[in-house]
Image (cartoon, rainbow, N blue to C red; front, side):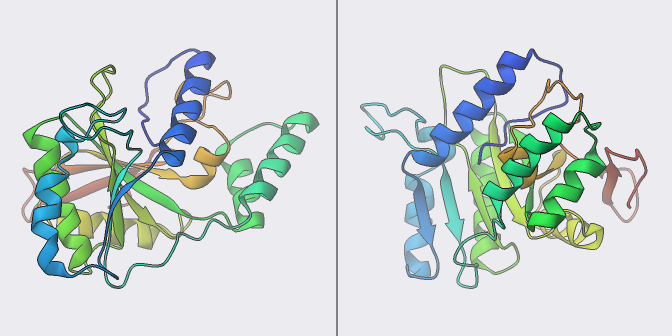
Length: 246
C-alpha cells in the first residue's frame, strides 16, 4: 500500500487523492527481486538496472516503457506474503464505527485492528531522488538478502510530483513496541540515518492519511538518529503519547 505520509495538514480531498494513488501503485506491475527463487549472483546487476531514481512510475520511453508501482526485494527467508488479517472486516467495522458517532481515536482504531488481526505496519523513510535514495535503497535491499531485514520496497521516480521516494520496511505487529524498536535497530545497522516514521497498515486500509478529518497523525512512531549521543542510537518517540521509547 502507499505510504507517502507526513505530518502536514492538507484538505480532505488530498486524503482521497493519496488513497487513490495507493491503490493505483499496488495494482500496477512491480519490479521484484525474489531471493527465494533468484540466485544472489544476479542481484547486483538487477539493483543497478532498477535504481529507484531511474525507474519511472508512469513509464518513460528511454527507461521502463510500462508503469511501475513499486520496486521490491524479498530475501531467502522472507514470508510468502504479509499477514493482512481480515482487512475487509476491518473496513466494515470502521464504517459501523463512523455510523455510531463514537469518537475516533488511535485507541478505537487499534481496537478494531486487534479484533480483525490487522496488525502489520512498516517503517517509512522519505528521500530525495538521485544518489540519496539509490544509496539507501541499495543498503536496505542487501540487508534483506542477508536476512537482517524481512523485506522492503521503494517507490519509483515520478517527475510530475514533488513527492520524495519512500522506502518501506514491514513489521508484523504495530502494537508490539519491542518489535518496532528491533526493526528500527536493524534498519539503522545498515547505515540509515535519516528520520523514520512508522505507520500501521490498518491506517492505510482505512484511508487515514495526512489531513484526515479526525486529526489523527498518520504515523504512530518517529525515529531520529542521534549523531551526538555516544554510542550513537535512535531516539524513538510515540506520536500517540508523545513519550520516548528509547
